[in-house]
Image 1 (cartoon, rainbow, N blue to C red):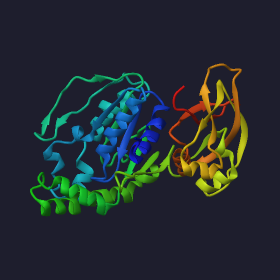
Image 2: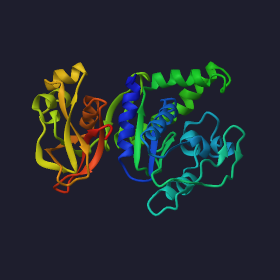
Image 3: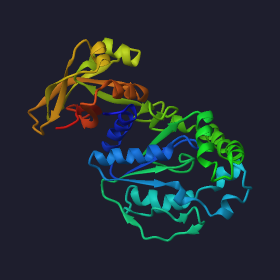
Image 4: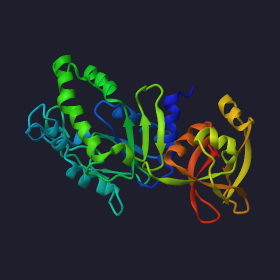
Length: 335
């Protein structure tokens, strides 16, 4: 059975699998927002779709303790400025996996528990690698191909984090003080100075871990993307129901794909579209096979809404249309 969390992570994984190679993905958010768990699950979802995937934690790129705590063990400014060695991470991970890089990257440079430097040989990335990295402040000094922002309210993250770190930090009272004075004080500064949710290409609401919310996908908050529809998303009533407005579009065709049909069982989708019989397209590679439809301009919030409207028979992919326009389209999950 596919859970609500599986579905949201699956939509994000579909999005990443369709993009460049290798792909450098940040999973960003405040302390204890659920970044590490989501990053691990997302890595597994990408791998399940047949693409190489690996997960790194910024824990392996902390500065030594003497640098991390030089402004005081409880200092928020110290945590914000001194926790991570971003320069080493950029040089040893992001640059090798970026344009023109040799794909030889390091997985860590320090053992955080023992505060011991590590000099391990680099890993050679597969050409199609999706590297998923979780950590704090990841949009401050680094450039990524994609950023997933895990949006969790401070009060919920504080409760999670203090319970998680009670033993590590010497008791519940000490953990609460550390979150209030250091970790979340630094996180508030980060939100104020950088605005990481607006700059992220994907935003996942994670207040309820069993029922996350896909809030945005496909670009930053002000982005507009092309979505090619050959089916019910062209219908004004469906657009009003899921986007809150009627969309404008241009006619186009999708070459190399033939149209088929799928029977929908989701009552909400049937109610919105008025039918349980929806078109679906499958790749043939034959230029004589074409599917007509409409290129719609949608916001990243609307693309997320479209992802949740389409049932699991569909996956979203990036294609080139007959006009030469690049657009997202929902294809058959399996050829």
